[in-house]
Image 1 (spheres, helix red, strand yellow):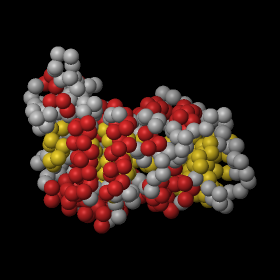
Image 2 (cartoon, rainbow, N blue to C red):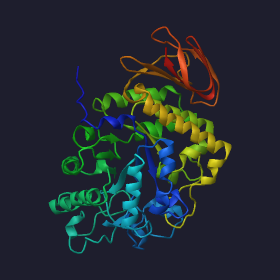
Image 3 (cartoon, rainbow, N blue to C red):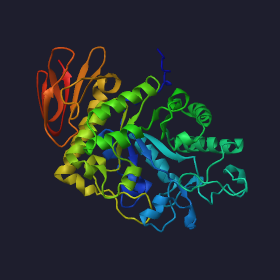
Image 4 (tube, helix red, strand yellow):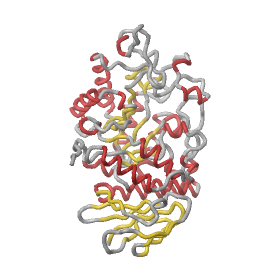
Length: 444
């Protein structure tokens, strides 16, 4: 029998942490680092441990629309500034603020007990990137010398150039050394050679032995040497969405989880999310918060926080924000923070706060094994245990818009004291759940 390799060691606190994505343009009406800093106490109150900022570097202003991505054209924005099409990797875009603003943001986050990750974009750059005149070899060239563009029509960085690698390694060190950031979320990381990230990791650990690096990719070897966490497009973007929209049975989520558990190294961490800036942009008026209903999103969040991996929240999800979030300039929707004062928003905040607290205080939810429990309605019920040597937590989630009542193949006798429950009645080994109901209980 083939033995899976072991993922690299990561800080012990990471497994119990919760991550929050801030996309500045949509996070506040001002769209600035300073305005986002003012909301950090709210995130600390919620229970967030890691905050990651979408790209804050100077965006390219080239108006040649042949260098704009297809979804930029589809957005209707006539402004060229895509935060993922970077012109200057060493300078904060004035749209977001100043160096001092970032210093203050990181300092405030640290005082509140949170760590800060920056979003870096090393697969491609902007067509007028500041280094191109002096370093034309920093981008990939076609045989005729023209710039080769990648999937989004942006120039591809040339990792065959050792000088480019040094430039980018220094860039990673710069933000950590000068601003005390705690790590990075690496955009399209699997399109960048893994050996680049391995060297980057070694250099960053000299500055901060507990640096945290998140791979926006599904390359299975990432966590052997370079990364602490990976995205899970297969599970979060596709399977989970299909289940909560009613297009696939609940069992599809279990089957996908089991497949990924076999494919990734032992102990690998995967982030668990329902929304992010890409989904919020591309879903337009049919974001998951709307498509799955608020009750459906509540159930999905319970699932994300109780499975293994790192729960991940996006821009206003904790108050059930549901409007369109375009990543492009000139499209004005921002998080509707007054929603926090409504019943829906207030209830969601309380739910997420409770989930964060459980994640921090119940060891099985951070460190326990996942043991799936068979049930009599696999098309409508997800049921599993989180187990450590001394404790066990049972999780039951109905991801459908219909009630379900069925039996559970629980491994041993005993009762489960509810930690969190909605529309659920557990009697022995029989569970009855309302549409999108859930139950989280501790074994006694």
